[in-house]
Length: 254
Image (cartoon, rainbow, N blue to C red; front, side, top):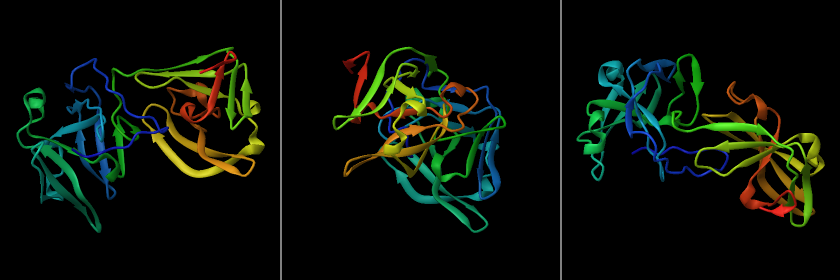
């Protein structure tokens, strides 16, 4: 099945709670080439995790602009998935639409439903809000909690952030992330990066690299300058990639 990418350099974790396929109460639309090519209030949410797999929405074929789809000769024989190319004016998404021809028993409800390669589309909407990267999983939770823990970030022996007022972001299935006020980060060592990523639960992230002496550690810290309304507490705060720094929590190396 089509691949999607995650954000924040986090790997998708397998989340076992909840069914793999369920009817979503959300109104979902997909835009490509300036046109809404799928529009439905009866989509199925496919919850899938693992290499190249993230949650997505599947549409009844009657709610898809099938006249814009042209059958492709490509078929994933292993998973029995057929593909279509989407053509709108001078825009084309090769193999941009797909469906199971004979879905396995655990996905039987998807028979006759069509989905799209997420990042090939111009936009996906849940109700009137754009959602990025993949469908939001109703069994996944994001909590942001103010803390007085002492958090210190060290790279190559150099302390580059030191705070006693972090916000801790707890996201189901992923490592705890520590968001630090910019006033507690040595911004003189930060170099703005061209990298930008998107997260369905937090919004659009900007990145910085750290310059320690002659060494540049690329894209080691990110921030959400304008997070989605569900995550206002992390606005403008900075979070370092735990796995690539020495992170001290209350003076203990994490």
